[in-house]
Length: 106
Length: 114
Image 1 (spheres, chains in turn brown, green):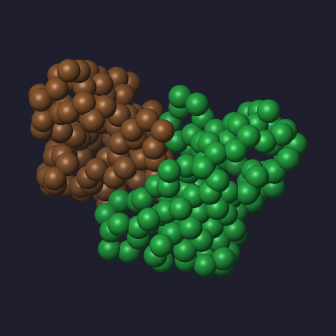
Image 2 (image 1 turned 90 degrees about the vertical axis):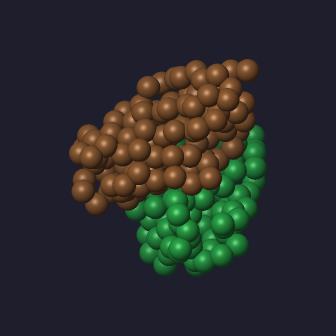
C-alpha cells in the first residue's frame, strides 16, 4: 500500500481556490488515489478518486502528475463549510496518513 | 449511497469491561472495515471484517482484544475487550458498496474508558 505525505495544515481565503497537495511516490501502477475529508466529529466523506487522468466532479477536481507520484485536490471556490481535515489515500486498503487540516478563512 | 447505522454513538465504560459496537448497513456490501481514531489523530485501520470467516487484523491489533464478527453482508460487530483508558477513542466502521465510488463511513462510536 502506498504511503502518502501531506502538509499538516493550510489556510485558504473564502471564495478562493484551495489546492491541497499529496505525495504518493510509492504508489503502484494500478492503485487509485482517493481523497476524503473529515469534518469535526463526523466520519470521513469520499470526495474524488483517480488513476491516471485528471478528474472533476461536483465537489472538486483532482490533478494527478504524469508519473503518478503526486496529486493535487482543488476546491475551486472554498467556503467556510470546507474547513476539515483532508486525507489522500493510495491503496486498495485504506491506510490513512496524517492528512491536511484546511482552514477556510472569512 | 449506503446508509450506516453504528451503535452505540457513545459510551462511558469501566476499565476491565468489554463493549460491543454494531455496524448495520442498509444494503449488501462487499468490504467492511473497522477503524480507530484516537483524540486528535488520524484513523488507524484495525481489521477487515470478512463475511463468514475470521477477520484480517492489521499489525498491532489482535483478535483477543478486538474480536470481530460479520455474520452476513449487512452487519458486523467489533468488541473492545478488557478495556483500559488507552482504548478511549472513536471507533468507526466503513463499507464498500458495489457500483459506488469510494467507501462510506459510519458516524462513529465515541468510547471513554474510566
